[in-house]
Length: 494
Image (cartoon, rainbow, N blue to C red):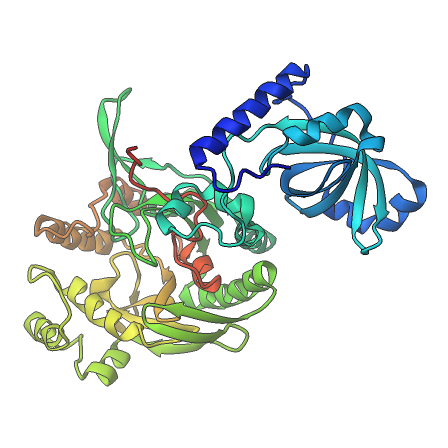
């Protein structure tokens, strides 16, 4: 077989187009609508003894990944989603179909029918009695040994990476298991899966800069949601639902980094008649369950911008105090310090900040310098009220709130509260956030009068919690972009 060594990509495409024309001359359809595939590669291996003894005819289909041999005997490797199977193509077995072999190229999708046997080399194979083209590939795949070296190309043409790398596909199988385990865990504990609006008049439920779009039918500007329906799910608590959750996409018009993307999946749950301490117990069990189901372990080695961390989810998770941790690490009491003193501390640490930032943003910026050093898993508790506009104040200290964050490998991997259900307190905090927006803080929360009205009808004590797909990327020890199938890219202007 002519592998056209040294040919340019343009020349290779032309060679393949000539073969396409030859296939059509034979009266064959190079792009049929259906295959007779009835076995996967893995299925054949699982049933190998029975298939060999019964001499049952099987039909496999997949992408042609290797061709070896010449003349009247050719060995072909055919890859499907489950694995790879060798097909043995003999001229005296295939008769007229053997003419098709010379018109095949690596990357073509083919169908092979025949019986299962084991070669002298010990490889389970299909002895072909029928061969069919399913899709003629006009462009050559990247060379499998070295893969796609350019990261930009890898993300832009992710389908090529999947075609040549079963390991890449396996990561997304794990990601599907990750979200399914999350869903199963919550459903088994009585939570109802719900769907809330992705387009909102007011972007609420998080500190983030939203995307804005226009709704033609209503002739209004709307926001893509920045949380997984937090304020909507709380309205459900007002309406009498007691345990709800949602898994979906949310959007934040902010910077790209190893940890952050603008379009990503998030889970949030809300649980009436429970508080943040109840929620912490549930979350610890949930993370352990998800890790086992998706990764088969609770022990991880995680690299991050902050360094390398060994993380073991299996033990009892420690709690650390927000204010006391900052005091011990940086020597400043953020409850007693003035805004100017916090700014001076940030300047001393050579941390960039906006001089117009209000107190909550300054405190949060200071905390994030400390977070980078914490391997976890730990629950961070006792947050100042200024950094938590939606959390309930602590009864024994009104300067703090009933909130917790999961810290893993120097980053936040989940956020939960005892939800604020005092409408007057909530209105006051929204007003403070509005002042921050007016001062230029695009991530400060918007005032939502409709939500305040809902709270005025009464919301039971409620705890809420959420995590994003960042948790999966950290456990997989990959960047956020690597764990999205098709991350957003700038247009490729050729």
